[in-house]
Each structure stands twice: as structure tokens, then as C-alpha cells.
Image 1 (cartoon, rainbow over the protein chains, first blue to last red):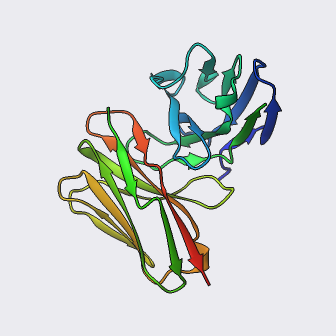
Image 2 (tube, chains in turn blue, orange):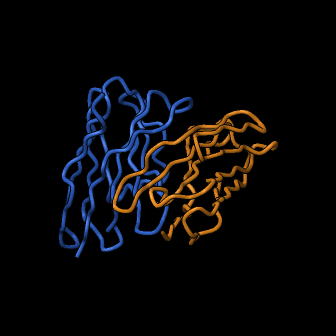
Image 3 (cartoon, rainbow over the protein chains, first blue to last red):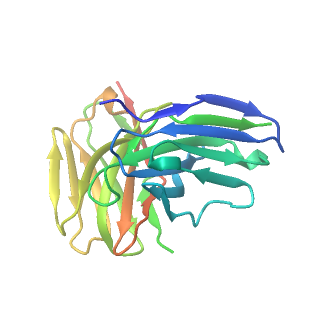
Amino acid sequence: EAGVAQSPRYKIIEKRQSVAFWCNPISGHATLYWYQQILGQGPKLLIQFQNNGVVDDSQLPKDRFSAERLKGVDSTLKIQPAKLEDSAVYLCASSQDSENYGYTFGSGTRLTVV
Amino acid sequence: GQQVMQIPQYQHVQEGEDFTTYCNSSTTLSNIQWYKQRPGGHPVFLIQLVKSGEVKKQKRLTFQFGEAKKNSSLHITATQTTDVGTYFCAGRNTGGFKTIFGAGTRLFVKA
């Protein structure tokens, strides 16, 4: 089966600019996650979707971050405006459900804000 | 809020030595997952433990879930250079939707 696709792989932007990341989960996976992984740390959940509904976005900085999952398939994560501390790898993951299956992660987007 | 702590942060071993990483949660977990992330890569799912006291094995890897379902361990017997990477535990709290990742244990193996 095809894995979780993410694009772009790398992005360099200046602070205060905007950026968007795209994720295509494994076909049939109802649950989709966006994680932020800062160098040397574990992944931190930003937002969790079940189909096209938001299950948890308690750690999403909503003043600058937004995410959507239209039609319950693809998802986009946007940052506007970016700050230096947003430099991280943004990982998308999907699973068949949120409780009984492990997550399949994409290769991530490495964001550098200068 | 729920916290998941892992120790040690780093471990250097000689090839052939054993390795163990420990994971502790501040709350009772409904399940715990383990992932491996190679340098420059993304986390890859290894296993999920659900039952109190559960022990599962994958070749040289042994995973254990504590009786109280608040701690877990991953033990690697006779490490190989291919075991290099960061091992993360991820715990889901009872009655919750969220799975929280620990900070990981980075394993270095010297040939």
C-alpha cells in the first residue's frame, strides 16, 4: 500500500511570511494527525482529524496555525505569519482509527524560518 | 495534563551489548505504542501494548507494559548497528483521544 505523502520536503521562508503543507494519508485511514517535531524532541500533536472533523486541536496555536481536511481525505496545514520558533519538521500521520492501530507517518516537511 | 517521560535521553553501547529504554506516564494509559526513528527519518510504528503486564517480542526486541499501565520498557538484546536511532514511546490516556509522545531515547551503537 502507498504510504503517507507529504509535500514539500523542505521549505525555507522568512519570518512573517506564510507557508502551507500538504498531506495525503493512506487510503481508507479515517484518522489524520499533524505533529510538530523540533530537533531533539518528540513529536508534538498539533491537530487530530477523524474523517473531516476535528477531534483535538488544543495545542494548535490558532492565532497563526490553521488546518483543514476537506472531504475527509487530503489535509493542509498553514502557518501565517511564521515565527522563528516555528522551525521544525511537520509530520503528517494517519491510522485506521485512533485507538487500535499504530500511526503511519509521512516523511515530513522540514521548515526553516529565517 | 498528561505527561510521558522517557529515560535515558541518550545511550551509547558497544555492538552486542543490551539496551533498555523506560517510559513513564503521569496518568494511567489505555495503550502504549513504540516507534523507531532513524537519523533523518520519520517515526516508524513498532508495536502497541494494551493489556496490563503484557509482554511482546519482535526478534531481539522485547516490549513490556507495566501492571499499573503507567510504565513501559523496550529492551534490545545484543544490539546491532542497524538498531541506531531514536526510540519513542507514545501513550494514550484512559478515556482520551490523544496519544502523547515521549522525548525519546537516542541509541548510538559502536561497531
